[in-house]
Length: 633
Ligand code: BES
Ligand code: ZN
Image (tube, rainbow, N blue to C red; front, side, top):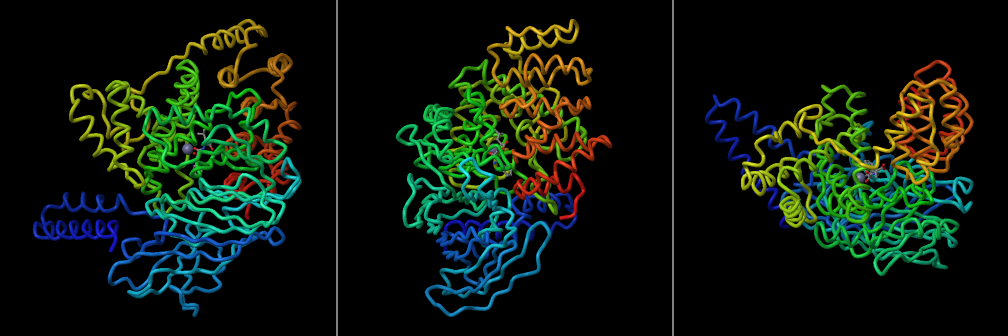
């Protein structure tokens, strides 16, 4: 029996002993209640797996990519570990067709049970095992609507070639691999992928190919244990360009040089990150820029970040995305949220770390612009959600809900502000030392919020009690809204922007020379902070001076369209439609469609645009927008 399992058993018997004790003292009602919560912390409501009974340790994946039928087919061979009396192992699946299952080296198919599908979680796959079972080989194929997969037609890519990519976080890995799909379960993997001969396939590993292989057969190994949500695959006419010895970029062939220029600082970012919080644990760090339908800004797939092309602004002004996904190599990939209720441990920590990397490379003036914009976003989200909304807590309760519901600014930016306050409370040196020790002590482990609070109390608060007298940790983590002692972030570079806003608002003055050196952050601050209500003439003037409509910088275009929609300014409609039909990043889509449907005319427009654009969006974006626009799938 493995370390992990025996630890889990120890814990179980410890808890049973305590429950017995509590049973004796039947009157101690409050302790019983506390105990229930204690055992609940670690429970992952978003997976059917029962890892204390039988758990996966290593995956050998073997998949053929069929661009005609848009399916993956092959097998997942899982090495497992189990308790002495385990009778079955349970996997998560979603819309998978299970063809047959064999055990160990035996080729005789065994019986299994695929339970009926839950709307959010998919179908549990129960496989009977015995004391001699060491591996379980599942032959299967994916459905054409596998939620994690997006199959692109040639016209949806820059290079006009077919493309496929996966997006597994949070619980979509089960739609392309039968797996124990919870962030507290880690495994190593190797894989063989067969793809069309003119294409290249890359995965979340350090040993990716760097050129197209004439046979179409590729091999991979990830020797570090990772959770299933970090399983990733991308296939297309991809090329590689080196940045330095351990970093490089992948992109569609026509984009490679542009991407390499934009991300030239990647190597320095890894160096800066290591200096802050310890050695980079994953070997290589590469980034692949995907076609524009990728539903997120970035995804921290180990060794190979997946990124949207919307950050290729041509002036390196959106590279904090790389800092963010790189930071996840520590916060998230090394030390992982144990359940999706603890999502802020992944994203809040990563926002904090991202800002520190940006500060190290570009100075505090620069990174504080981004921090300040995050706080502005947070304030809007809090207003939207309502300060009393339980989803404004850092520690979430997503039981019975799609984990996607918790993936918003709260985890990111309230989490960020909390950690920044910790830094300011205790001073940067002590805080950095503490964070470094947090990652070192929890490498390749999954952690709950409660693990963090315990570690924080023991290693930082207790030894420096006097400094923490005015910080209420429990309020920050377990209560709604934003505590009053949240830091305000003053930004010198925004003073000039605020002046321009004032000139424009009070004197209708647009001073073009002042903004000559502004980067994206300044423009965002400007667009987001001009008065919410503007006249048609004012919007005409802004656009004539600054050419926001159709701007090739997606962040600027998006912020501008949002402002225009709020003012029913219809001159943007055709440019906005083009934008919405070419970009699938959910961060842009949701606010724009959301604003459109607030008026009757806008609703018609939203439905018209969505009818054209929906087919080009990833299922993650489709799901959110179908719900928003109340469409039946
Ligand atoms: N891990 C997230 C993306 C994600 C979160 C995917 C939840 C699925 C479910 C990634 O690291 C992220 O935060 N991306 C941001 C980048 C930004 C904060 C720089 C994004 O996509 O906008
Ligand atoms: Zn992130």
